[in-house]
Amino acid sequence: MDDELSMYLSRVGLTFPGLETTIDSSDYVFFGVPFDSSSSAFPGSRYGPKAIRDVIQGMELWSEYFGVDLEEMRVYDAGDLAVSHGDAVATANMLKRAVQKITSLGKIPIMIGGEHTFTPFAALAAGADSLIVLDAHADCRKDYLGNPLSHACATRIWVDSGGKRTFQIGIRATSREERDYCKEKGIIQFSPFQLQSDSFMKSLTDFVRKSRSLYLSIDMDAFDPSYAPGVGTPEPFGISPIDVLRIFEAISGANLVGFDVMELCPLRDPSYSSSALAAKLVMELYASKKARLTRSGGGVRSHRALSHWQ
Ligand SMILES: [Mn+2]
Image (cartoon, rainbow, N blue to C red; front, side, top):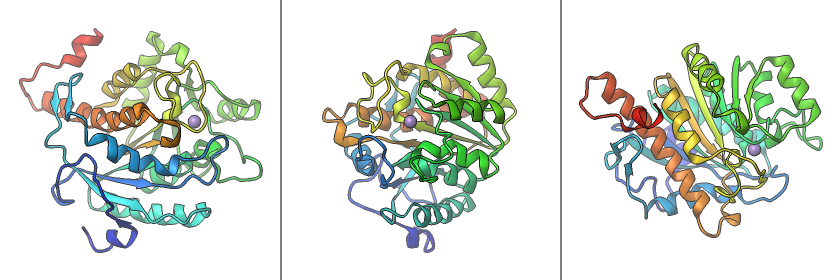
């Protein structure tokens, strides 16, 4: 690993996705942020990175939806961020340096949480001008119980720090303050009940087309708790995993500068179903980009996903 990067990140135990690779030969750098100090209901997301590495070891590296073999995933697992438990400022500063380094190497960061608080810092450090967030919550509180660096403030930190364009999907749990803020800031929002509408896909593709550099963040509580019970703040009436494949497909042509899966809470996931879904999200996101490249490069692989949604 690059010397400077190894100051911030160190490899631990199992790697994702369990393939031996080098950072030089990779397009993506995967790392964990095992930090959960502001968890407002149930703590435990600090174990998310460990769980996703555990569960991937028993899964097939094949995307049925996108028709992509992931045995040769160009993803390098750089380990976990050296977090300072209880100190979100110090941890965010460390994260910014790590992401800037990954980006300067021409690689795309894939971050696994840990609490959602760190998304805006990663997105800004990666140079994103546009943010798509899948979440049950708007995360637009000014502070939560006096803490402005709470996971309930993640999207607001992005906007207030200069994040220009924001598109939220799956939102269904907000305060009046957040609803007013989102309206004032022009944040585009779709609830789970609107995802089958034509206007959703039209709005999403329009947003992606106008993005110069896109960061995608998935809070696991965007999913219905029946799909992903392993989260700290479950909210019923959520989105389905199939919805996300369709979203991946719609954004596969974007200039993606970073991606994260946050708020996976393995302490509330005894069946490992939520961890398996989180692992699959990373693989399918990768597969969606690969399928897109194959098609634009004139590849002959039939694109199963397109026909599925026509
Ligand atoms: Mn959330």
